[in-house]
Length: 111
Image (tube, helix red, strand yellow):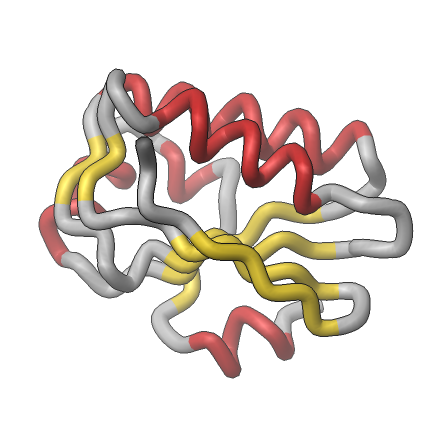
């Protein structure tokens, strides 16, 4: 079971991701992100500050979550600090389709 948490701040919802996102945890995290896309939410911030590992299952989940957010008229924003995870996401081109922020305030203020 993925160790995640969700906090709603008006039109923003923050979903805290676990340390590792892999085949064993990606589906549960994706379900939590989907559940965060409630009416009136215009952005979900995927708080990956504790995440130190993300494999292809995690990347696929992020792309699916972005598509779900777009279908709900919302945006998925990544809050990410780990240089290793950032490097993997950049190699896979995720940074071209999902905005990546380095502080919660920056992610909250984005337009």
